[in-house]
Structures are given as structure tokens and as C-alpha cells.
Length: 101
Image: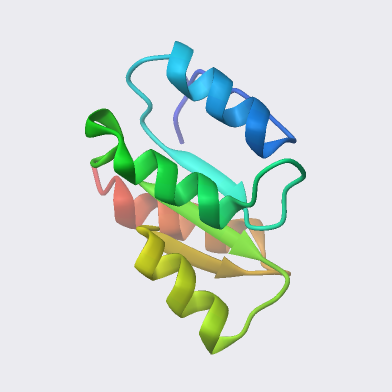
């Protein structure tokens, strides 16, 4: 799908913020809402509060799929929302919607 992608895997919300500030030009963020250190909801808000973060697509996923959760993450600025469990094809479809070419 993206053969030249540079992928950074992080398991902690606070670590993500540190890395986010050091690495320019993010193309996509895929994150869970339940992270240690800082929740995905807070990360989404912080990304959107940065001038360079306004245009970054954010795919948020969670195992706590409720209408309230979906509304909160969309209000925080997520581009897409995936309830878990999901098939990898569903994630691919979301990414293709974000990057149609």
C-alpha cells in the first residue's frame, strides 16, 4: 500500500508527544484511545492544537465502541474511527479513503 512508508511504533501517549515534536511531516497517525501516559483523545486534541497537526489524518480505534466515544473522538479532531475488533481490510479501506490515489 505504501512501500516507502516510514513507520514509528509507540505504546505510550507521552512518548508519542515527545516523538511528534521531533519528527516533522507526519502523513498519518493511527492510534488506540486507551494508551498509558496520555489517552488517544488527549493526543488527538494536542495534535490538532499544533499548526502542523491540523492537516494530519488521524485514525482512532477503540474496543469501547459507544456513540459517546465516537462523538468525543470526532469532536477532538479524528479523521476516522474504527471500533475493535476489526479486520485489517477495514483499516486498509479507511486509509484508502484518506489517500485515494
